[in-house]
Image (tube, rainbow, N blue to C red; front, side):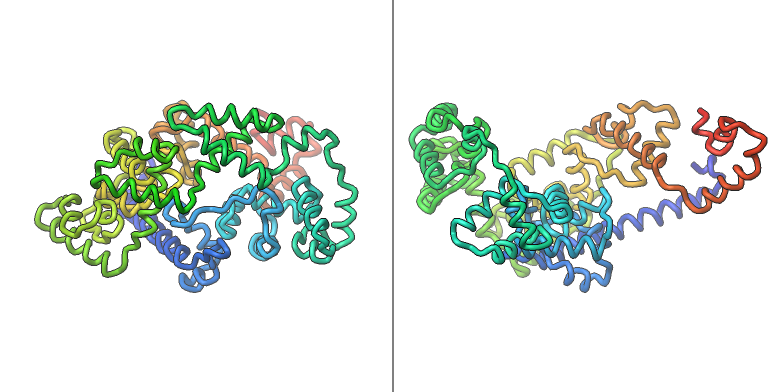
Length: 486
C-alpha cells in the first residue's frame, strides 16, 4: 500500500493507528450502549426505554440503535408474527417511531426498528404494512369474532385493534371477509383449544419416553387426525418445555442427590420422562436465576483473579472457585479484571480451529440454547478481549456484517481476480461463497439503480446539448454512459 499510494511508512502507520483507535472507540461505545439498554429494559413492556439511553449517552436515538449489539444483551427479542399479538400501545409506538425518526424506512433501517421495539424485524415490517395498508386476516377475524361473542362493542374492538382508519372501516372489512368454506381446512389451521392442550398433556405423560419419542407422536396423530404433523410436533415440544411446580421440585431433588460435576442427566431424564438435554437446560435456567452477582461479589472474584494473574501470568478458575465456594461458571461471569487479555482478529493464515473449537465447546456446555451467551464469561475463559470473542463467535456461526468496508474489500479482491470461494475464506472461516456472490451483485445493483446526483445530471445535460446534433443515439449513449456501451 505504501508503494501503491506513494505515502511514507510513518504516515501509513499513523493512518492505521487512527483507524484502529476509531474502531476501538466504537466498540467501547457499543458495549456502553448495550449495558445501558439492559439497565433500561422494562420486563412488563418487553421493551427498553431508549429515551433514557439517549439522554445518558448524549447521542441521537438512531446512533444509539446502530451501536446496540444484540449479542451482548441479556434480554431476548420478542416474536409477534400475527397482528393480533400486537398491543394497541405497541402499534402506536411503531407508527410514531417510523414517521418521526425514519420517514420512509429502507431495508437497512428495519433492524433498527426491530431493536427499538425489541421485536423481530420481519414482524415489525408486517405490523407496519398492516397499519399502512390494513386488511382483514383470518387471525384478526377470529379475534374480533371472540370479542363479538363476548358482547364487546365495536368502539372497544377498534381501540383494541387500531388498524383501520375508522370503526366503520373495521366493521365493513369484518363482514366482507370470507372464511374458507372447507371445514377440514378450518380444523387443520385452527388454534389449539384448552381441551386439546389437556389431551396432548395426557398423551405426553402416558406415552413419552426419551428413548422412544415417536410413540407419543403416533398416538397424538391418531387423536387428532385432521391436524398437520408439524403442528402436532410443535405442540408436543411446547408441552415438554412447560414445567409445573411438582416437576421442578422433583428435578431439584434429583440433582441434589449427585455431587457437582457428576450429575447423570440421562438417569434424571428417564425418571422425569424427559430428555437429558431438557432436564439439563431447565436446571441451568434455575441455577442462573438464583445466581445474581453483586458489585461486592464481582470485586471479590476480580481481586482473587488479579492476585493469581500477577503471580502466575495465568488463571486457575478451578482453584478460585474452590477458594470462594462458587462454581467455575459463576466466577467466570463475575470477574471484571481484564488486564493482559489477548486480541483475536480473524486472518485466514493465522486462524486456529483449536481455539475456535475450544470456545464453541465452552459455549455449548455452559449456555445451551435458548439461554443467552454470557460473553463476559467467554472472554474470561479464553482470556481474550470480549469484543473479539463476540465477533469471532458471530463468524463461526456463519454470520457476516456487510459493512461498506467489507463490501469494498470484496470489490477490491474481485478486481484482483480472486474467486468467490477464496474471498469467503478471506472474510470468515465458515462463510459460504453464495453469500459473497449475493453481497457483491447486490452492491453492483444498488450502484446501477442509485438515483443520479445533481452534478451527474448537469454533466449529462452538457454532453447532450453539445453532441446531440452530430451523434446518433447509440454513439451519444456510449459517450454519456460508457458502461451501457459495454
